[in-house]
Image (cartoon, rainbow, N blue to C red; front, top):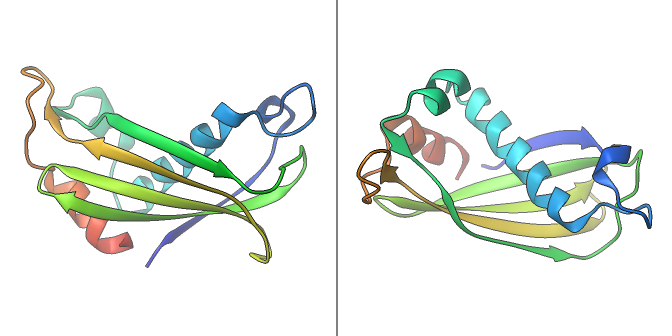
Length: 135
């Protein structure tokens, strides 16, 4: 089951040509990721401000299929996938609100590390639950 996040394209998301600036697509995907964490019951403030672990993104990519303009309403469907005990991937589809047109596809790979030693460690329970909820 995927998680769906709806959002409107803002002027600040666009470039001089009036379409979404390429890097902002990843920012929108990250918004969807954060919203899915909240929806699963994770308190973002406590999870990200005093962590014993860090979950950095180590790879990200986007395929642009159609332009997105200021004022467009879009849906971002994310589907996380565990890769092993310390790594997961999130696949995103950016769609028109009616879901008839695929605008872009993106993915990000995340690795869990100890916040102090920076060595890989097992994903925390909250993230494992989140992965089960939306995969």
